[in-house]
Image (cartoon, rainbow, N blue to C red; front, side, top):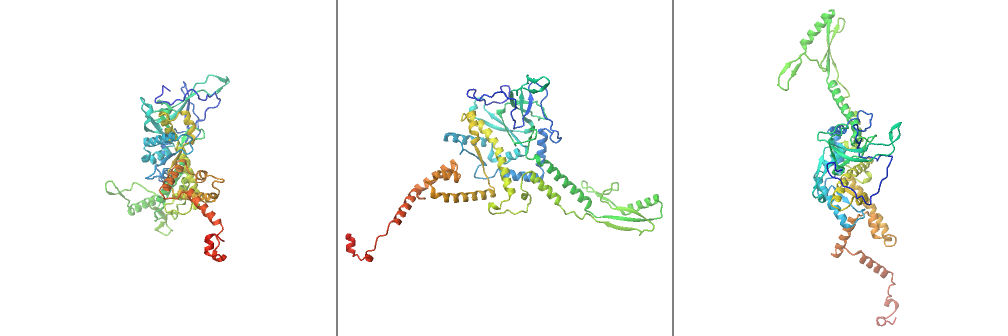
Length: 536
């Protein structure tokens, strides 16, 4: 990688798992372009579809053009607003380390470096724009800049890269051995490969591989996870809505043309031409038309009104000759369109567009009221929408994983091998301000508290208190320690009663209630003097 621009984070040679040769190429989930080293032509797949033959530049341009459509922009706004919740008090996202089996100092360092990553991204201020950009383009690139003299400081800056100017490439060594000379396309083993990024300031078109080669560790690359059938292009979540958007545009344009042409009422003039010959009848008809028709044209630029008879529009009246024997000269009216108020086709394609974007159709209606009720009243579409948002958040979290990995490795908090072991246990908690989510959490808490109340008599016999708090109430390590510290403080301050002392008091009261009552001396015929002496 020394010949590539940027830097590379290498693994230790000792203790690494050796990989033997394979006959199957490694599955590339980032749609990297494969090329053969030393060859002039790159290897690519013909997708067979003119719409998909476009390069990444064309696809990104189409996605950005789609985002300007009002309905698409509204849907994207709903998606991004749900994924990145705006809160003045909390951060948009926090790292969750409850399932991470490392020491507490390491967890603290991970939280600190995650805060540094958010600061480099300016995530608290630009979270909405970053997520929206990633959702529309389907990919996100950042250049991870470090101090070459002191890489232990970690990343110093993150610079956004236009996805139209960079792409990932996998370069294979030129194969030498063949299985059969008759079939040169079959290789015995998959050749060794090297990955890198190509950047061109003027933009990359098609399969052009001219530009600056950049080491993969110097670039943060996060894509949508949507790949075409041939796994040759990264697609945006807007890709499946291209057809629906174009259909909506066409139906809206056709509706405007239809209404412009059919809305006005036009007159039909039947001119009596008697027994005149055809030529003279046409001349007489033209004279009548020029006599009664004055087409005035208003010029908005100059403010002039002039008589323009050279142009014929589709909205003008009709002039028809009528022979002798008819009803003579007549003027009738041709009515305009009668179904101009129907918008069912427009509404259908709008709903189809929203379904293609995985947004509930109910959000399309501007006059729809907000239902405040139990989570049981939530529609199935809203539940599906929340699951879609959760998938988007999970995929977008690869951005934090990549940047956090680079930061921890450079600063020596973790090695690459250690990161590979713990990365699956690092989760990211996004702030949710959706009312439906709040209702869901409230009902879940009610159900958990009801279950705890049922299990409480068996605490200390079949269940421990810690088990109930962690498994039933689903308290994380941070919440568990924080709540325990607060309880201890409130007990020491006298705000709360110690549950252990309360339990002892309850047991003492229960024992007192089980003891037999003392007899009344008067009822038993014993004098007070004998009772005090004990002579009973």
